[in-house]
Length: 410
Image 1: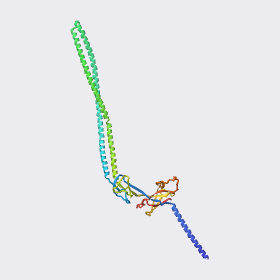
Image 2: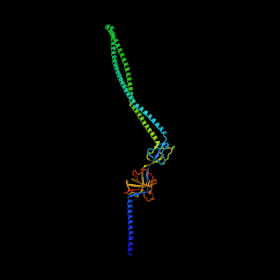
Image 3: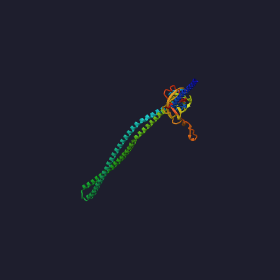
Image 4: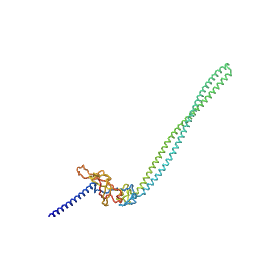
């Protein structure tokens, strides 16, 4: 009996030991799992995102060739669509012809500037020389007029003297005439008085002729002065006209500047025509895969019309929508691992950005809590996770794939 009791107690104790050992193991495992889970945050609301580049036409045109198809990989610079270039080439030829014509006009306008400057300078110098000559001639004529007027005054004075002498001689003749009759003076004396009267009369006539000549000379000199003054006025007008030469030069220079502006405009038109011609060849701006092709040969496309898109597989990231309760210890730069269902691989990255608002605020119809129908819902904040270099060398990750990220918060 004693042996059986001891065996029963030993079996029970062994069972307790096993139970306690299993409980301890589970506790340790649970603690380990809890510690690991408390050091990371995870969500299944995450996917691969990437840059999707829309390809559109920059000009109107007719499609003559389409080199790209859906789901085909392309490299930056590959030709995707070719538009008809005939009209564009004609526009370029016309623009270049207009530019050549404008450049010819500019050369002509520039050559006019020195010619006009030289001619106006010479005309001004000549006009000033003519004015100086006319002024000198006027001065000489005025001096001559002064001389003639002085001579007139002298001859007029001589006439008055001669007339006085003639009157005296005539009086002497009358006096001697009566005295001769009475034989009070000799006949010789009387004859001398008559001769003196005749000489005095001749002198008066001579002086009056000198006065007439002087008056005629004055009239001629006055006409010469008037003519000289007219020439001076004409020369002054010529100087004023020649003085407008700088304004003419400025006008010619302005014409040259306007021609230069036209050349600049025509050069711009040529550059625009060249750009339009280059826009007829639509190339891939980035490496990627073609998607949503919506263009075919023979189709007329308009500027801005989307023709296809390119998914840039070299520029992808993970967008994970974490609950707001998970963001307490989340920081930019924390390490992240994420699993991708499509590849079955684990990738590495880090937290790159944290959105400025919840996803609900960016929705088309954001919630309006002020209506009174408020129900508190845990919001989700988009987190952008960058992928470490070299993780996607095979381009296996595609936008839209589901992932499960785990952020190491401690």
